[in-house]
Image (cartoon, rainbow, N blue to C red; front, side, top):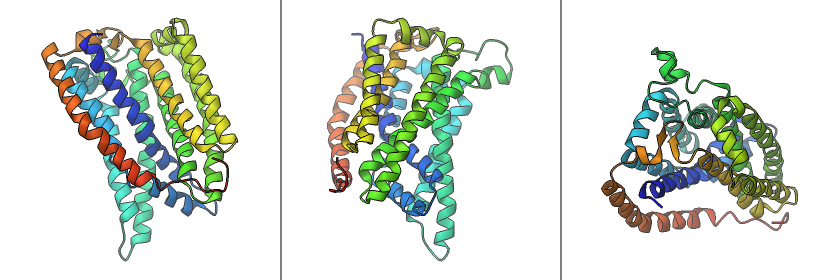
Length: 345
């Protein structure tokens, strides 16, 4: 395996980690926005408790991916920063707004604490809705092959360079898919976080509904990919690995829904995370060896080999600190979320 491919794989592993961990945090914000009924305050409190101890740590994966992309694939980083400047800037603003709003919502107080906290809760929820939508739209633009030097190439105007590459039906459908996937993950995870049986049932029903919606969103993306991302579609249908990948993805999807239906929430959590991960790797494999299709390969975008070797060495040293620290963080703050005897696990 070439060094560039190895580093690209690590970048994608970091993005995978961000999707299944940070993505669930975004999904929690979506459910906070959609909370209804007599238990809406308790639902939002559960979401805040679930996110609170670890929400900041989940951004480690996104930061790692961005640093590696900037250092090891500068040509790709530069093109992304130009062509997708608008959605990625809005994603950055959304992440900052979401993080600060969550802090004020969860830990704010004072004489007008209740009213102020409701306002911050709304900011947190709306940012959680818009940010993954834009992040997924950026991914859709990459998959469609629209992220080229100079934008779509149809003109030199502002729209052609900065808007047209991502303002397409296919890219927006991928954004919607990402939003639904994150909401699905969050609902599945919250079934394990909930200690009260009625809250667990609330999120079980929402997870089942989101799982069905995820299937519909996937069909929409696949349909639009015929004209919006033909290279990706061809890879997902005709590549030698396509059928095994689809069978495995389908098996994890059925397992997740069956686990929810039978109230085996730990099984559902593992299967849901695996399902989303397999979908992401299907996208990555479908555009390999390109980092930005149709004209920039991983090898062409890579930094000199000496840089890649130094980065891999730094990653090895950093992993010795980062991975045990993250394990300890989750062990301390998440081991308390043990399912009660009410309901089979």
